[in-house]
Image 1: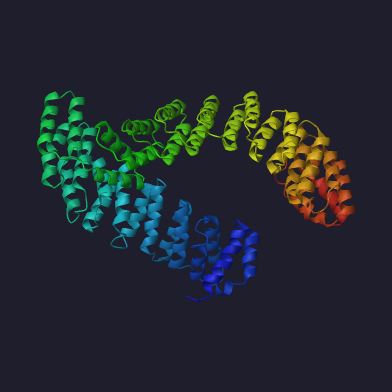
Image 2: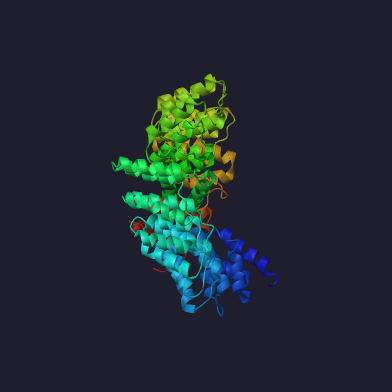
Length: 635
């Protein structure tokens, strides 16, 4: 490796990251850096990995740009870096195209590249595509390793691609790739529902050959659960001895599954027989084994399988580790809030309580699925057990009640905290104020504002912005202005949000004098802030039809605040309103005061021509600029 390559890679990546997106100007900058003569696959690889791994568009842009340079050709090293980046960001279309290039050019990729691609496809629910990549790899090499094979086996079986899963299983068996409990467990669990028992046992024998790491008791439970789930309870009962003979001894959980299935089918005598067998031959389930397997399922994103197994455990009233309960609740809530609530209640019944992270995940998903009554129930249950005893837990409760639109209940939490002696900080008030405004409850918002100051809690910038934004949008600009002056009196400095809300409201109400005073305050506060705000102000004035006021505003500003794009916005407003004469007057003033801006203004106006519904007025304005500045343009 040449010693200068890492430094050059850092320099090139910084240039791209500062650009933010792949554009023609970025390409020009790369040319100006003057490294094209030393460009090679190693440099491309080091620019992308590690510098651009989280910037897939830049990485792919640089990769494609390099391929267009004279005499350059990618190799396995540069393909590895860009495919790693694209796998990380799940850009499957681009991955497919690049793998096609690799096949065409007969480039040999490192197996780790295929592993990362397969893993990314599984995560992105592109299981069938992952299988196609697996097929491609296994046709050119002996194995890509046990972990990706088991992950793919589980994913295919879970997603219903049983034929593909069978092919992966056969490939692993032929090449003696070790199975693990996750891969083979999910596979046999799903396949056994419709497979012949003899075939199931044959596959079990194949998997356990030289694979002593597979947990036999868990595999027995999964096979029995799969058979009972397919209403094959008699076969499940009969296979118990066969499993035991293969060192897959069914535990109490497996026997309970069969007993429950017989009871559901009304076979009381058969249920008693299996319970008797359980007492004689069964073993207690190993808590740690199921804990590890559930963690493996969740880590492997087999959430549906984790949910099913968790349901069996709690319905049988078997012990469930507190850590597992937390992970189950948080993970399952995303796909089945009702089931997550069941896990939650089971946990609380055992006098155990969710972590703050688990409660946040559960609450977020209940809100997402509109399960507001269930959210209230969760908080009520926890409240009865004195769970809410610190600021963090109370803040979580308040914020999710507000998110769910339960403003009255959220306000009740504030009162509860006060009774318990908590000194509320401004974040609690902001949370409820924001919910009040979102639900158009302005009277309660005013009441809470008064209550906040009465309790000695002063508002911060967010407090003022919440209310100013709402009052401005609700055509109550007088109250918004009162709050603005109040914040200035309290030495709370407005920001871009404050000024934008006020200017929009004031322009809409045609209170131009007040609007100019507010903008002048922003200039006094920070020239850069005012420069950022100016375009918004011009746009608000134009939308309200105050073109002369907008022109007057620009004429009164210094060049460090009034940039060409502000004039472009005004001229576009003139064009849309058909005010060509006013536009010409403004252009004449620009020519007299800042003639150098006319070139930039005309270039920016040209961009509106293809999309504007009023192209003719813009052409007239451009012609005026041409006449005044003696520029020439292509038609």
